[in-house]
Amino acid sequence: MTLSIGAKKAIDLGIFLFLLLMGAVSVAVTFAIVWVLLVDTLRFFTHPDGGGFPTSLIRFFTETQWTPTFYNKQIGIWPLINGTFLIAIISMLVAVPLGILVAVYLSEYASWKVRETVKPWLDFLEAVPTVVYGYFALLFVTPLFQKVFESLGIYMEGMNALSPGIVIGVMILPYTASMIEDAFKGVPQYLREASYSLGASKLRTALLVVLPAAKSGVLSAYLLGFSRAIGETMVVAVAAGMYPQLTANPLQPIQTITGYIVQVALGDLPFNSFEYLSIFAAGFMLFVITLVLNSIAVYLKSRAVGY
Amino acid sequence: MEQKLSLRKEADAKLKEFDIEAYTIGVKRRDKVFEIVGLLATFLVLLFLFAISVDLLIDGWVRIKDAKFYTSYPSRFPEEAGILSSWVGTLYVMLGAIFWAVVLGIPAGIYLEEYGGKGRLARIIEANISNLAAVPSIVYGLLALGVFVYRFKFGESVLTAGLTLGLLMLPVVVVATRESIRRIPRSIREAAYALGATRWETLFHHILPYSLGGIFTGLIIAASRAIGETAPLITVGALTFIAFLPPPPWEDFLGMLMSPFTVLPIQMYNWVSRPQEAFHTNAAAAGFILLVIALLMNSVAFYLRYKVRRKYQW
Image (cartoon, rainbow over all chains, first blue to last red; front, side, top):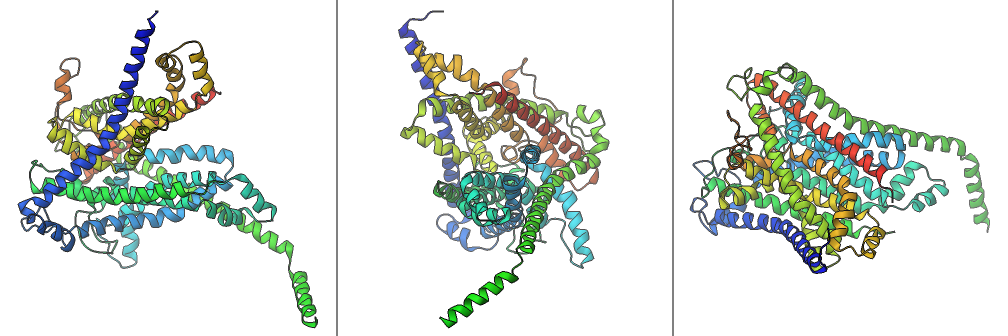
């Protein structure tokens, strides 16, 4: 097939424009997210059920209960934020120590063979549907803990923050550990060799040379893990309950921002109803929190020392 | 002088007392202990995966082996309820999602890698895509609810669900496309240009064929994650009780696109959140099937990656 040069050039331009368009669409998606969240959040704050602007905005940050779906509407966001962070902090209590252990082991100690066998399974953990983790938290972890706590004389609710928190901790672990491992990989070999040549052990080298050198990468990995725990939805929707409250007790039922969105979205949602708009206001908070965490993580990563 | 000498003596005495052998043994022992602790931690995580699979298998075995489970609609009676409408729904929705991820993601990746350069526009698109990858999936659900369901009036349909999951897959596909194109050395492109090929000829005759394996790997991994996504589909209004199938696309394509739907993870969520234990059995069975699908897709991706690595060694 022979085409004239002109035709070829036209095809070249056409394909370039097509590719550019598709790239632009992906940008449009980000803008669409921000735009939709923003518009519907504004509609939430001007809705008469919330008291209209600016009363609703003040109520949003000063009230201590979140009940936009009740007859008596309270719209204080804090109980949801409390639940969200309670879960995320519990999960980090699992993911921080285990993450560093697994990453140090895999990158500094494990033989090539062990690593090649273990890594695909860790990757697979990331592909396990989150609703499956939710099932596990509700029907395996919670009953287990209930038995343990009962023998200690402590009562644990069937819906609580502890078991979904722990399960999310394990869930984000492969993600966190593999990012920490990447940070370790960025540390040049000669630093390790220098340390060994001074007689340091592997452990000493890992903890006192490699870890400090990869500091900002490790921090950024933890922040991204934290942000993922905050945005995690199905585990908390299944196992954490539907009771937004201000509490630090992990044995109590709570509700997270994501859990609230799921609970409301399961019902019928007319476009202009206060309930519909309230999930956008809650979602906007979620988006802002995760965006801030991700931006700090990206900044930290960019600041990572290049060797 | 006197003082210095005594200090020196003290230090010498200490050095004599210092048992280098015992110290070395101690250090080595601590090293070993840490290695074992690390290995245990890694196995703890894998044990968790194992526990989930076994738990689901045991809890759901009665339904997993029951052929009627795969051919019945959901029902009020747990023993009669099945996953027919949800697995068919998952199939249609995933076909849609893969279509959108391919149509949007691969061209965007090619643009960024081959044409983008270091220009301002390319940098904006790049920053956007890395941002998109970190947005919680339920926020995509809100986007879809606000844009596709209400503003575009697509309704709570297969089309909306496919678009939503397609957007969710987008960042992974873009990154995979870029990375596998980046692995092709410049010399290939230069050789093609030297023979008088235009950019698109180089692209279609060389760049794409060589990078397709890597792109497919990324696509499968993205799809294996999207298939288990529940949250964004709840917000776009996936129903939990559907006792009919969308019309087959070869008879009524538009009807299929606009049909209400349910998918496997949603069906499972519905069963988990019911109080009756008999429904939990169904949930476990559905969960195990999801796990098997995810495992199969990941294995295919793993195999493909291995093959690609062997095939092209520049």
